[in-house]
Image 1 (cartoon, one colour):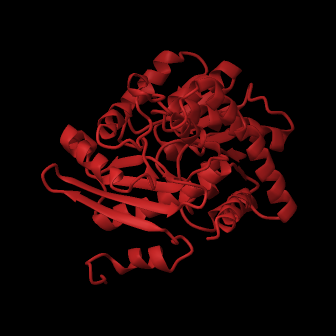
Image 2 (tube, rainbow, N blue to C red; image 1 turned 90 degrees about the vertical axis):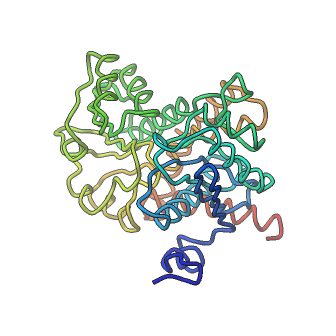
Amino acid sequence: MTDVTGAPADVLHTLFHSDQGGHEQVVLCQDRASGLKAVIAIHNTALGPALGGTRFYPYANEAEAVADALNLARGMSYKNAMAGLDHGGGKAVIIGDPEKIKTEELLLAYGRFVASLGGRYVTACDVGTYVADMDVVARECRWTTGRSPENGGAGDSSVLTAFGVYQGMRASAQHLWGDPSLRGRRVGIAGVGKVGHHLVKHLRDEGAEVVITDVREEAVGRILAAHPEGVTAVADTATLIRVDGLDIYAPCALGGALNDDTVPALTARIVCGAANNQLAHPGVEKDLADRGILYAPDYVVNAGGVIQVADELHGFDFDRCKAKAAKIFDTTLAIFARAKEDGIPPAAAADRIAEQRMHEAAAGRGR
């Protein structure tokens, strides 16, 4: 069933009626000359201008792209709130295979659409977009972060994303085992691309044993070459989550990694990874808790990247950003404490804290 615009009715229901909706603005963008089709979703601006990356992905259809933009934008509101940033949540998706259709003309057209929002949405990199792409977008839009240092930016945000996830792992270990050290722990990482390969280095530097998998053989090969000791590879994620003696599982690829099929099979005691939207649907967080698996909420531990790009707007300083990202350790511990106090899973506790900050900000602005 569709509405008068031809959009699937379930998408509009999500936007206007469901608990997953409540978005302030959704912009559909099209530039026929360059082939651009994009969706910009702004979820909440109570804390300030929406900030979130641009995902470039070959969605099966436009409805899937809109749904992803809505979910990702909502997640950014919570992430930015928990990171202590004065930014709301937004996200953009460009529809198509970046290997096939990404051009300078397309990125410039996209930049013009972002600029047309007048600063309500600040963009950055995400899956399928890179620093060089943001440099192009910035030629048409000053509300662009994730640029190269040569163009006034901070460069690759995956460095601090990985650092934040690492801090989340240390906090999880502290909460569960009474010691933040990961030395001798076995950590499984699904996805060793932009973020995952930095995470491997943090873990190996501390003496953790790492098991990896990735759909790209070349990515696995690079990790094994860089770390000839202490790192092993398995065929796929289904194998990884069943590895005996796994202490921590880190989903670092696309979302939905924790679902009705994977949660019962997990051998790890902790889940802490960089992927967005790891919980496939509401209720998965309770399934994890019922199995005694400690879940570090994804949008809390992977906030290092957004902390970095937000700092670009104020004159980037890496040491200042790293100090802020290091606080993810304390934030994660606070969430576990709130979860225990309220008798709820950590994901629900994080949501409550984030919602409280957004509500207080909105009330303070008379909204």
